[in-house]
Image (cartoon, rainbow, N blue to C red; front, side, top):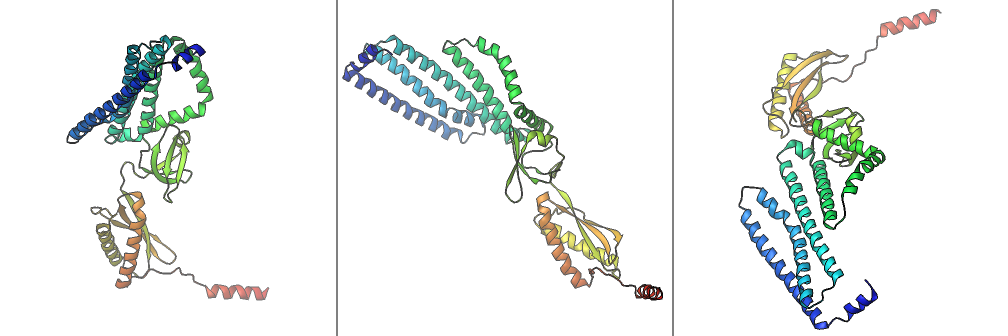
Length: 364
């Protein structure tokens, strides 16, 4: 803007400028109140609706409405300036560009909010989409914003053909510069498609980390460990790691408990008592699987005991610690009542053999 134009703006009469400011302020207040009233009533009406799309549509209109109000304000400003004969070419061009830009931005923001909200809505129903929600949202938002930027540039009169033509060379340079990032991104896509892990699964890596999968992101996967700290692992490392998924194909898992009894014990009686305790724990404990048919397997004549394994069933991996603890406490109490002995380790000294060795040593 030249100094003469600036001086011309300063020399404008004060009264028309005051009228323009008051009119625009009143128009903004009226449109804001109308927006609040209309969207408020629509929101109250759709609460009783069984459909989610109408709620999502109304929620997506909130931000774009403010942008639309701003564009209407520029339209009102243009007509007021023409009415009061402040028809400056550069100012009118700026207002026209601002109006077109705001309309494009309004449409882009609405589409972005609607589609990302749609992804979040369907992610609650789809296990696959819930695991990949972050990646799908990011890809959707990138595509929408990129197309919106091209449309905006075209609206401003900037040719987008050279930009599109240069994307091939640019994308190659970006791919080389961001090779580790792209590797992690496509590894994340592979995790989503192959589904070796899902959000909220409890997993164990070959490096020893265990925890709940909290997020599968663009670059990394977040695993919340039992001490309540979080391990962030690059997706490429996770794709190449050996993973134990304790929630796949189902959450329930067997809980083996090793027990040993004295050699003088009646094994049939031991089996009967142990099964009674095991069934009682599975039914009474909150983490036990009631209908599981528990069993016992005798497997070892050990140095001081006959060992066997009791198979319990927990609802999920993390519950097994509490279930096993409750079973051991109850079994120890019941064995004491039934007179079943859990022996201490026994070590025998062969005195005859030791005496013979001493005699040989003396004769030498």
